[in-house]
Amino acid sequence: MKFNTKTIHGGQSPDKAYGSVMPPIYQTSTYAQTTPGGHKGYEYSRTHNPTRHALEQSFASIENGNFGLAFGSGLAAIDAIIKLLQPGDEVISTNDLYGGTYRLFTKVFEKFQIKFHFVGMENVKQIEHHINAKTKLIWVETPTNPMLNIIDIKAVANVAQQHKILLAVDNTFATPYLQQPLDLGADIVMHSATKYLGGHSDVVMGALVVKDKALAEQLYFIQNASGAVCGPQDSFLVLRGIKTLHIRMQRHCENGKAVAEFLATHPKVETVYWPGLESHPNHDIAVEQMNDFGGMLSFTTKGNNYEEAIKVVERLKIFTLAESLGGVESLAGHPASMTHASIPKEEREKTGVVDSLIRLSVGIEDQHDLIEDLKQALNR
Ligand SMILES: *Cc1c(COP(=O)(O)O)cnc(C)c1O
Image (cartoon, rainbow, N blue to C red; front, side, top):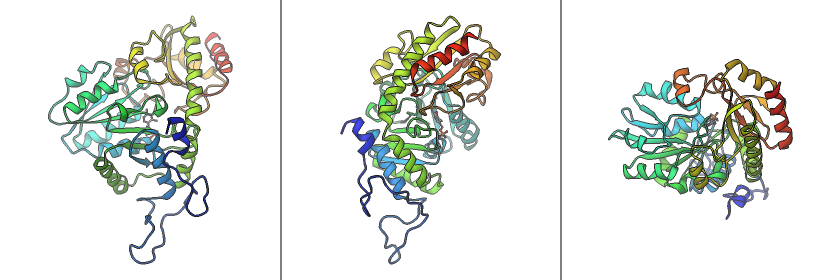
C-alpha cells in the first residue's frame, strides 16, 4: 500500500458490530466479561480501547512500523520513552529542540539521575564525542524547532547501531508524508499528534511507533503502568485527521515554499530558515532525506529588535498569534517570548533563537492572502 492510501485505510477494517466505516467512539471504561477473564480482548480502557486501537494501527501503518501507541500528549509519549532508562543512563539529544521536551529532560528526568547532553547534530561527529558506556538513547528532532536545521537520520542511525544505542526521532514537524525515520534506521518514532497528524488544532495527543516487538512490549507496559493514555473521542478525531494528512501536507509544502520565497526577497527580512531554500545550510540533506520541505519556517527581521518582532506578529491578521503548529490555519509565534521562554536566553541564543526570530506554521489557506498578510505586517 502506498502512503496516500495508508493514511485512509492503513490498519483499518470496518467495525465488526454493524460494519461502520469509521470505528465507533467506544466511550467506555470497562467491558462485560462472561466469566472471570472471559472477554473479547478488552478489559479496561487504560489498557485497551477499540477506538484507540484503531488509531494505534493507523499510526503504525503510516510510519512503516509494526506497533503504534497513543498517549494523552506528545510529552506523555516522550515521558514513556525516557522511562525505558535507568538512573545513571545518559542521553544525547539534539540541542535545538521543542522547549517542552527540554523542560521534561532537564527539570523532571535529571532529578532521577538521567544525564542529558545537548548537541548540535548537523555534524554527526559531535554525537560520537559524547558516547560512553552509559549512553542508552539518542534523541533526534529534525527539522529542529524553531531553527529548521536538518539532521541526517541515516548517519545518526549508523552511529547508534554501531554502539547499540536506541535512536528515537521526534517526527512531529516532518510527518511521515515527508520522512519515515524507521526506514532510515531509527528504533522509535515519536509524534505530537496535536500538530499535523490531528491537523485541526482541536486535540492534544502523542504517538509512538516501533518495529521491534520486544521494544513495543516494554513501551506498552509503561503506557499501561503509567497510564498517560488518550480518550476515545480524541482517538476518533486524530484518526479522522490522518485521513487527509497527505493532501494537507501537499498544500502546507506548496504554501511554505511560496511564503519562504516571498520572505527571502523582502527588504526588512534578514534570514529565512526553510530547508527547501538552496541557501539553507542543510539543504542537501533535506533533499536526500525528505520528500518535500514542509510548512514550518522561521525568519529574523533586520536589526534583531525584540519589540519590532513582537509588533510584526501582533499586526498579522490571517496568521493567528498562537503556540502550536500543524493545523489547517496559519499560526505565527515569537519563540523567545513564547515556546522557548523556558530555555535560558544564553542557551537559546547559542542555537539561533534570537530576539527577532519569528516562527510560522504555514496553513492551507490561499497563499496570496498569506503573503499579503505578511506584507502588511512587515511594511507598516
Ligand atoms: C508540540 C510538540 C511536542 C509536545 O507535544 P504535546 O502534544 O504538546 O505534548 C513535542 N515535540 C514537538 C516537535 C512539538 O512540536
